[in-house]
Length: 129
Image (cartoon, rainbow, N blue to C red; front, side, top):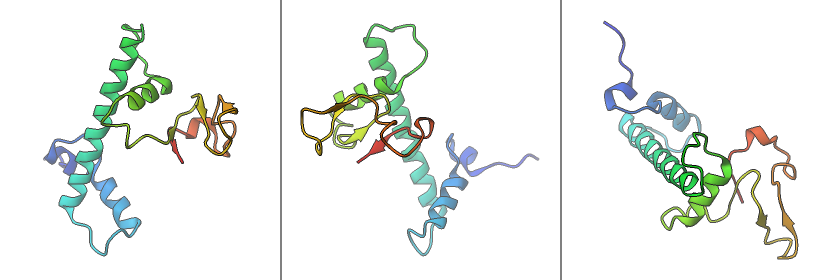
């Protein structure tokens, strides 16, 4: 009989055991239950699916209906224009985006955030200030 993981039992794609191990390793609480890890995994999977769906719709609306690749600018455009995601990602900075930093004033516009940070561009998905 093959082994059944917690993700398979719950019908999730994201790994429940790995998220539970991360919760335990970070010491958010003295005890971490299995149901808490399942709930957090389900929430993360749902948010990821919603963000991808909104980004795909934004990419299709911008004149790319047959394009099968979502770029960071499509994700940024979708999250900044969606009223539900705007409070969560208001200060998010995406690689390759154009934004005005509040520290530098309105006159200085940067075009590539990844080159100004100390992280490599391929390691930076979303940088939140």
